[in-house]
Image (tube, rainbow, N blue to C red; front, side, top):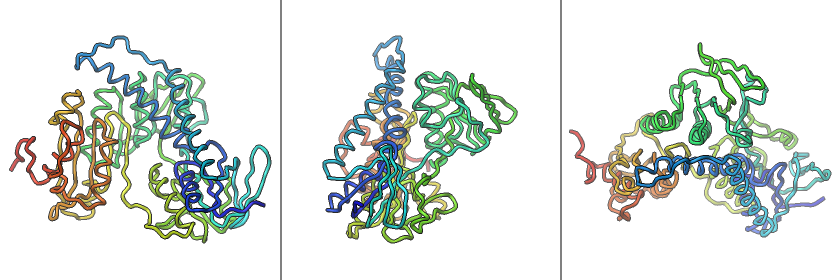
Length: 463
């Protein structure tokens, strides 16, 4: 029986960085993956969706390029070529992960991992079974799409993974769920030419955002992309057959070629048998862990989606690093509390720290500085003036507490705020920092000035 200092179960964005970090610290390390190196994020989530969204976004900008003096008639989508680009992107990155694991001396085991005891892991693969001994175990098994039980099992009813594997884009798509996954895929499908309807039972889509950001995104989705958004009502029933699906919402039946279910995700622990190690999932199936990702069982860690924390790839990567360091005896700082979120809708939207609504719920006195892209030279020159950036700052000290960006390059722009907020910078300090001109990034400087009503590129605040 082979023995390892650290065994990582799951090779997604949390697992493989954890294995590499443990190996960097001198631990004899193995990683087990039952399906695809890179996990859901690389193979059926973050990366393939962004590859397809990038193509869809480019097509949309080309269609709108006449306003900039660029004529591009008869723009069309070669969906087969788009899928080939997606797969080539995934394959290249997956190969990179395998090369990195090999370079760091991490043993790669293919198959279903299951606990036999606290320190013994069985790996059942196509070539048979083996058992390894592990001093420390890091569980990084991720999550999968949650599908309500009342929905029929039919080819027309799919979740995000199956949607990305479709050989053809549905002409009519109903998206059940207005969270970030549903809205991202709805925008992508609409930009590629599908007729899209979103059904969300809550009062609005993207409820994690402040109302001003939601309004901006929803306006663009409805007016620019032609997406129909039905909120405050859920899907009551579904009839699905070979030709598609009929979706009942209130008194209305909506015809669709596909129903895309995007109502959330659930942790993956099937086949793992954590109870054999004395580790029991909670009522929702999560393996709960503390701030260093340690479970109730000494020597076993849980990172990423499976531990019930932020279901974001970059959060899993950070947790994986921290868990590996703890497992190797390095007592570093605990998990980061400040995790930025990025949503690749059209327009893009991103946030970090407190929202205005969260600050109000905490009873905090805050000031908000907002700067619209309609007043930004670089945005006007590029013909991309929808959206804004904003700071949420403590009213007394000016310390930055949160930020949001909606519009062009929002998912890149938010990194500025993700550095400024934990550094405890004030709006005054950001405002007095020279930003290059003309750039999208200088919107942060202008918004910082707006916190105190000193923005020279906006009309004076109303008294």
